[in-house]
Length: 221
Length: 221
DNA sequence: CCCGCACATATTGTCGACAACTTCGATCCA
DNA sequence: TGGATCGAAGTTGTCGACAATATGTGCGGG
Image (cartoon, rainbow over all chains, first blue to last red; front, side, top):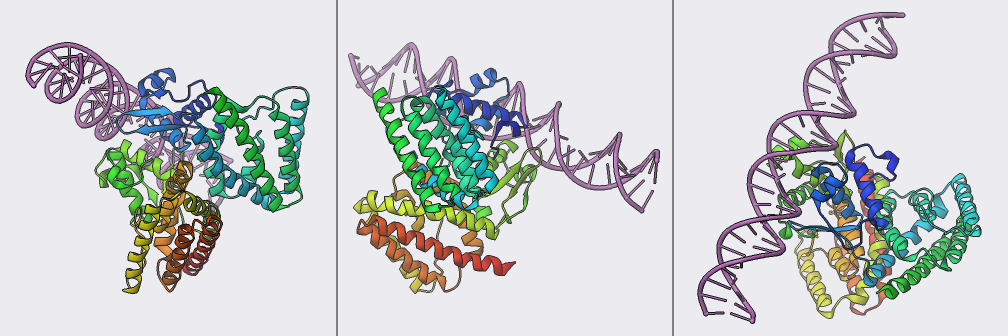
């Protein structure tokens, strides 16, 4: 599948990326129904394009579909979060381990630069908002694993749902600085080619992150 | 997504299941091109149905698609196998651990019965061919994890590709008996609710299995 | 008053036609 | 002869019409 929006060539590609963005950022609310006709007028494309987009959103676990009934955006629930992060911990931990093994020195340097620029933002008081894609720490580590199946499972399968939870519930508060430090330590381990440590630190980081979001999710209820 | 063929209600569902079966079993050869028109006449449905089916096959990693060019069945390669099994080991290991935690006593009993009936087949000299779905050991353990994301990632994401390698390259020879014993030990650990052992035994079983298929794949070249 | 049935309405599922694009081969020019 | 360009054929992408299915409403019977 495609990874970033500049690779979009067909109308279905573009609509899919736009819809995904709107869902992740809450422009289209969680748990709301998706009407094909409504979307097709709003996004100015035919229904086939909308249908194909919805199909792809389903593989991202961002919408659920029932035959002859329709599709709706997933709901953000504590149970869903726990199950998602359980899988995420295992897979991203593995990604960190493989990244420590397989990333090139150049890529590790770039990752360090990226973190430095993030550091500026954190210091300047800007929120530590992670863009989707290339500018996101987790994204880089995942790609760094160099395992096509792992990359696809993570990016096409759960990455955007994770972002949905993060964006809609978890990107504020004092956790920002803490998270940044945790990222730094993971990169350190990757730089040292310490596979086991990289995996362990990543798992721990994700576990902390889950606790933080869980709190917000329960509080909101 | 749907898990078994009896849940298929639309033409797209049925066509998808049929196509998936034909690809996994090699009726449609690995690495061959999929023509929408050809398939739509052969399976007696419109092109939209074929297109939707191909989209779903893409999420199973059974076909790859390029915009304005078309789709083709994946090729079975040693590199692909290694990357696939790397992910599989991690995820199915996790599934075994969660299964040891979350399966009901009833489900564990059923799993034991299933293995007994498999034992008959092995003893009678029938090949230890694993049906897709409910009759497959791995399938049961995955469902036993009770983690929706893990289940979907495995079943919708890599399970059928694993089967494709197994069916087309690895289901013969003396490994059959060995594999059966390994299955038995995993179930034993699950019965004892020994999470760590279940994970470890499953990982080891998958690792052995990979070596076996790898041999065949290299030999075939 | 409640339950079930039938009809009307709205939504999704499927189809074939047309548009856009890629590919391959022939032709032309240097 | 080699290479580029143009054109034809075939494939995929997109669209709107029609069919099939679910949902909501009102009526009638119990």
